Structures are given as structure tokens and as C-alpha cells.
Length: 262
Ligand code: SG4
Ligand code: ZN
Image 1: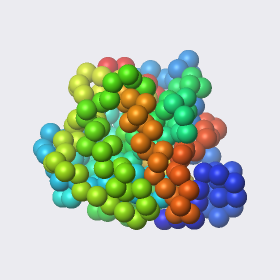
Image 2: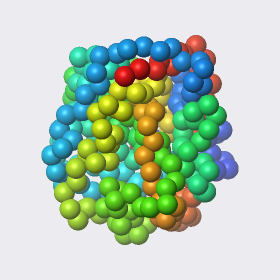
Image 3: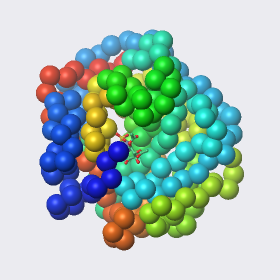
């Protein structure tokens, strides 16, 4: 997968297409979602399974983000909504952020950016592995969560935030001290879970493959300034601070963004 890329200068997003041709494709992510330009629909319920079982998990710094994985396979599954009866298996989740509290999200809503965005990546069970899923246009389903700044720390994220200082260096990984309930990081209640935008797009990093069904929840989660700031101390491969890791928005082209009305 893409390794030799960054967010600045010669390796920055405007150069990704030179080495990774899919990055100049017509169905790229992220996008700016204009609420006056979406198609309202009523899809079957989106369902998450297995997220209330505590699982051993670890976080890793891969130089581009901090990624959380669950030790056991098939810890959580996703189905319904735009995925219809297809089942998608949880692979990992990771974060995108900015150098201050006014930017950092990848998708924008009405041109508004948020200080952080979390992506929970699922691959289609039929394809057996994430690597095989990357060869198919319906290979991945990615849940996107946007964050706002709050005065108080969000206790659900403390287990992750607390170990960030131990994975500042690329390649480091660290087990979370307690078993994790994925459901605590995901949408807290099942009602707001049905209020989302969905569209077809790509990985937001090289190789930018156009293989993802994006599901962006309208509801926002909250993190304190201190929790956000802890992510900016992680280091890149070159040893610089990973102060920002969001790709700018890409043209919508001929795509239609759906808004599911709960
Ligand atoms: C991050 O760099 C993740 O670490 C990558 O995961 C991920 O690639 C990449 O972002 C793109 O994902 O949801 N932002 S995104 O479109 O999930 C994949 C790994 O390198 C394939 C495992
Ligand atoms: Zn991502």
C-alpha cells in the first residue's frame, strides 16, 4: 500500500497522483457535502453487530495516523443501509486531525471543517480479507465520525489518548490497558445512527483506490482541546511532528450524495 506519501511539500496531496494514478480519479474522497445538494432517502436500518463485547485491542503509529485494531478477527460487523444485505467486517479505525482546533476533518459539511474525523474501516466479508476487498468497487464500507471541541474530556476516548505518548515513534504499538467496547467509540444511540450521508468514494490516502462506500454520521462527537492536542505530538517517519493528516476535498463530479432520513 502507499507508504511514501505525506501531507506537505513534495510528498503532499497535490503530488500523490504522480506516483498513484488513482488519486486523480473522478470518484475521490474526501468531499464537501453541501446539505442543499443531497438526495433525501429512507434506506433500511444500518446495523452494527458485536460492538458491545469487550475486546483486547492495540493502537499503532504508522507514520500517517494512529490506528486501532482488535486482537480477535470479526469482532464487529456492519450491514444494512446502503450496504443492504451485504456484511462488512471491522478491520481497523484511525483518525485525521489538523494543527489547530479549526481544521482537521477530511469531509466538510457545507464547507465547514471539524477538528478531527475518525474512520472505522470495514471490508466486505465475501472478499475474505481487506487486501482482496481493495480490488472491488464495493470492497470497503467506511464509517466517518466528526468531532467538535468540548470543555470536558470525553471519557470514552481516554484509553486511547492516554497511550499516545507511548507510540510517538513510527512503528510503535501499544495494547490498551483495558478491554475496549467499540460501541463506546461509535455512535452512542441507535436513533442518531440512522441520520447519515452516504456516497461512493475512495481511500483518502495513496493508493486512493475507488473502493469505498462512505457513511458519514450527522451527529458529532466531542473531544477536549487537550485530547485533540495529544494526537499532534505523534511523529512521522522523518521524525517530524504529525501536526496534520487530512487530505483536501476532491471534486464531486457526477456523484450524488444521499442523506438517509431516520
Ligand atoms: C490511513 O493511512 C490508514 O492507516 C490506512 O490503513 C488506510 O488504508 C488509509 O488511511 C486510508 O483509509 O479510511 N482514510 S481511509 O480512506 O484502510 C486502508 C492501513 O494502512 C486501506 C492499514
Ligand atoms: Zn481515514
